[in-house]
Length: 419
Ligand code: SF4
Image (cartoon, rainbow, N blue to C red; front, side, top):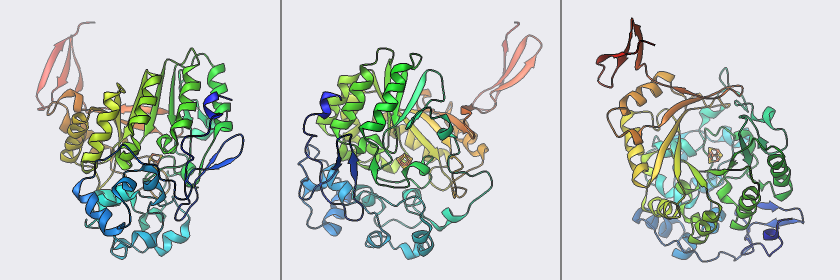
C-alpha cells in the first residue's frame, strides 16, 4: 500500500454526524471520518456578513473557527427536513411528506450554503437547486437512473472508460451538498461512504495497465469531501503512472464548502501538476467573498480551473444570469468551460429547458462578451454517446465558391472558400 496511508491518517478525522455517520473505508478497517470534539482549527478566516448573521442566529455556540472548519460544516449539515425548517419555511415550498417517504436523492446542505438561502423567497434559484421538491416524484419519458450508461462502461468498479484516452475515477459517493438534478444521483443515494483504498486500487491498476489513458478525471460524488491524505493517495498513485499526462478533479466544493480549500490542501495539490480542476458552478450568487478566497488559493497554486454549469429552468436559464455567472467566474480565474443540458435523471423534468433555450443563451453571449466568457453548450448524449456540442446556426450553407455566415448581430456575410 502507498506509504501515505501507512501513516496515521491526518488529523484523525472526526466526529459523530448529527443524522448520518460518514465512514471512510480503508483496506485495514473502517475509520470514522469524524470523531467527537475533533474539529481542527482552520486557516480559513473569511466570513461574509450574511453568513455571520446566519451563524450567530442558528449556531450561536459555534465559534468563528468552528464555522471555518470544513469538518464542522459537514458535521453540522442540514440533512433532515426538520432541521431545514429551522430557517426555511418549507411548508411554503411544498409538501415534504411525500419526499420523506420516497427515498429519493438525500438532502444535505452545509450551513455555509444554507446561509445563502436564508430569508430568500421559496422560488429563489439556489433553493430550487438544492432543496427537495415534490416535482422530483414526477417521472417523465426518457428519464432513467443512469442516463449516460456509465455503469455499462465500467471495466472495473468505480472507473468509467468511455473515451479511449480518458478515464473517470469515481472516488466517493458522498457530497457536502446534493444538487437535485445530479447526473450521478444513482451513485450518491446512500450519502454515506467514501469508497476507500481497496476500490481505488482496482481502478488505479486498470489505468496502470491501459497505456492509452493519458488523462484521468477524479470525480464522484465530490472528491474534495475526502481528507487530504486520501486525495493525496489517489494523486500520488496516478502521478506515478508514466502515461498519465494530466489529472483533473471535478468538484462543487469551492462553491458550497469553500472552507475546504485550506492552504495545506492546495500546497499538497500543486505537487501533482499538471493538475486541473473542473468547478461545478450554478448561479452568480454563489460567488461570495468565501468563494473568491477559495478560488484565489487554487489559482495561486497554479491550478487551472474550468467551470461546469447545468442549465436549469428557473435557476440560471436566462442570458443575463448566465452572463453574470460567466463574468464572475472569470473574475475568480475560473474559465467558463461547459454548460450542460440537464440530464434526464428520474424526476428532473421540472429542471429541463428546451434545447433552444441553451442555444439562445450561447447566442446571447457570443459577440456580446469576451470569448473567454463563452462556454461550450453540450448535451451528454443519453446512452453513453459522449458530449455533443451544440452551436447556434452561424454557418448558413454554401453559395457557389462562398460559404454564408451569420454573425452575432444576425448580419449575413460571405467567405470565399472555393475548396
Ligand atoms: S456535487 Fe456533483 S456529484 Fe454531488 S450532488 Fe451535485 S452534481 Fe451530484
